[in-house]
Length: 221
Image (tube, rainbow, N blue to C red; front, side, top):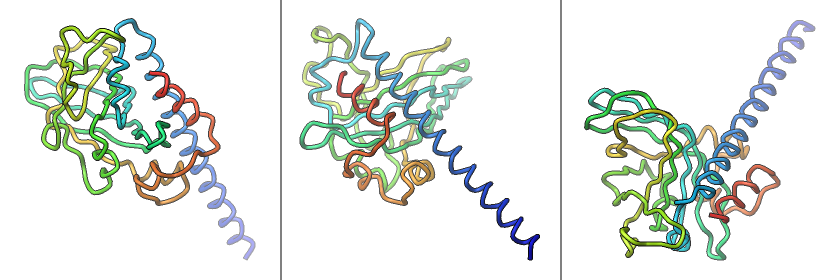
């Protein structure tokens, strides 16, 4: 009986340690996402204010691994947020970006990727299946410049605009064939619930400093 109690205690401690580790892992992902957003906001030719005013959602993927030799491949984990009716930003939903593209690519590169969604219906419907970045809606390279729209798509009529910052050498990057999906395990570990992405987006503010800082960073873009 004593041996069984010891085994149960060890198992309980191991589970508790795993929960704490998972929580810290998701906190770190949120912190890195905030860093990416603030760095994008700080560069001279940054995301136009005009686009952010129209934005209905945003996805941030820190350290997206882009690799290929003729046929490229990407994989990365990050967060998605939607703009609420009052103009505030929702709690983050953890997402995974996977896929590949055909084209001349060679090398391995770590990329910080930001996707700005002007279509408000895409991210809330993610839990119904994967969102194909090349087939479900149009994805365009985002225009740059805080106030100038010269040489850009002034109508801003694409459903998604992509921004990437390279941390290495690469012959090119394409999101063709890439898919965005909800990371349910990460969401369950962080929020301690099996709620859907829509439920997380619609939930009230949570008592978490990293989340609050991320929301502030996105609002400041």
